[in-house]
Image: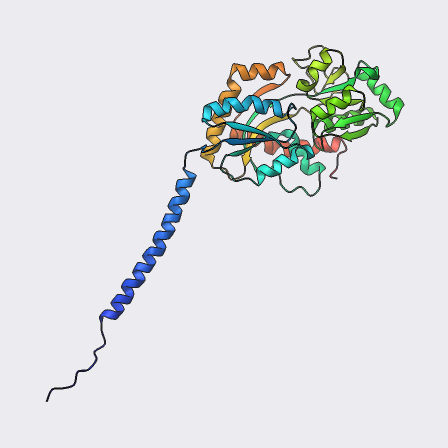
Length: 343
């Protein structure tokens, strides 16, 4: 009589489960590798892939705007993409700086970094970024000493007579500044500290706005960029009393330096450079730095800046980063000497 069939446990089932587990693991690993490959491909993708935005923290025509626009075309020609200069003025450049800090770190949003932005933590409370940490320095391009200007109607022609007027007027003389930590504020603070005088500060968004009120004697003094003030000094509408620092400006050879006028400590000379958000790929940084270097080395760029009273500079990424780091201690000392505190 035939024996009944008995179920025999299949030895293939564990093998099937093992095979399915292997396939699942392979799919997971494959997906992970695909994501890594995509990230690497994105990191190595050609740059720039689109127009580049260069943010300037002051209005058109100001001391930061002119070198930015002079650079933009030359850099764009080298990189093969247009550089779009975008003015976001206000708060001493902090509005534009914050926008760059929060932008993607892919090299398509840049900042015309003014030296004054490094003073922001020393003069402004609640700052949402750290300018010494949150930017990746690319290249320093220029510096330009500002000039102390007064309207012709004020009736003074040199620093000595202006200081005498300050002493006689108490705080009735108004001076224009373009935000905390800017050269217009810092040099006037150094001037008042050195002479023991007082004046009333009036805030503006940038040099062009300050200029308009200065021309009509609505404010009586300001440190303006040479490029903003030079034409009005030459035609006699403004009196140029002294250029901050030890040296005269090539654009205003007849205006003495503040050191010549007996005030060597009134010497805050602003500079500008190109910076990107922290974390921008080094390959992008280096290509951009090379484009900037070529622009700054060109005779056209150097002649344009020199005519405006600015001095071209050529500092690459490492040297510029070292300068920015070294500025923290120096600026803290300058802010203390000027009596500036966070507000």
